[in-house]
Image (cartoon, rainbow, N blue to C red):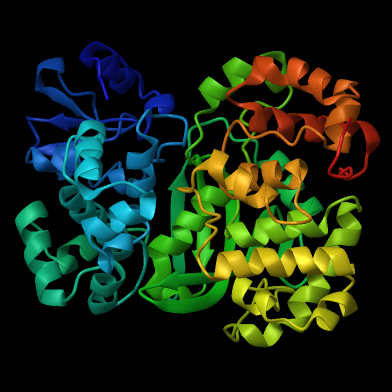
Length: 494
């Protein structure tokens, strides 16, 4: 990444939130590094150096600022950087992969050799994989000490340190502080709850995102109440599956989302927060996307690409939702969740109407076909769901953010019953691919006034490589025009 010092300093002097998380500034007069939006007095230009990542700043001897808290900075979106593989690896590290894995297993996970990953990582972030991983563990531990009442032992384990002693030694060496000193400095910790703030680059069209999720909310799994979104959650961490719930609300004054996790997810915090970031597309750069979409984005600036907390769930929703209305699909999905309720154990204190976990791939793969039909799934779709579930359960199909979108779309379309609409929808929401576009969608065709694939391609080419965001804007227009949820068309279009 090439950082122009003059541009970076202007961003720091103006506290420009468009640059938040894109670089960090080390201040030699204080020995700390900050986000560009830090509220302290702007340092002198000659005291500033700029780094691609928090890990690079720490490698050069700087400590994290206790005021702007670099661990709260928004991350990168998929299309922000040229090194998509390096970013995929970084996302896995952010979500705790290196607590159990190695550089070799990380490289295998993203589909490259270990040597190539090391080279990509150094070029992209200015540090080694291990240096980046250690910084992320420390920043997570710092966040847990500041924002929760978890015991220090739990903080050390949740952040991926093998022991409290190791945690104390590294914290003292890198930051010159002890866990108790960091906890004394914290002023906003919340006892008996896991409450976090996740930053974003403004603007954020929260109401539009909430409407999108509300129209597709499955009873017993999701609910929208008092301007907040809540749902049940299944998270795998360290070889163990943790079940719980999450509640997300917007705090526009602070330009953050406030995230509350159930106590049952205390051992899976980085993984759970990673799911929230993907669901709400917090790595988005709306200044870039909106400028490219032009007039299409003017009515609702800051539109996010609704993601997922589980790629398989999105694929199931897409298959079930083929041809039928969203309301009908919601009823079927709720019935499916009820029939597989025994597959997951939820904590006792569940908010609102949350009762079930979404069925896992393993559960649907072995589900009796009659149970699928009794839930309202037609026989053809039931066969498609079970074939899809088997591919995901045995690891031959990955529906995750790091998966290659083109190859994944091809693999999905190879499954009987999955066509281009379904594959593109999964690429949009499960993989977070910004240029995916379900061009046979009924609502998109109506809004754009086109009837053929060729006409659709010609009309939407202007929005590449952000056509997925364009699709969300167009769905929003359709729902506003028709005052009804979007409906998908059959998988073929002439």
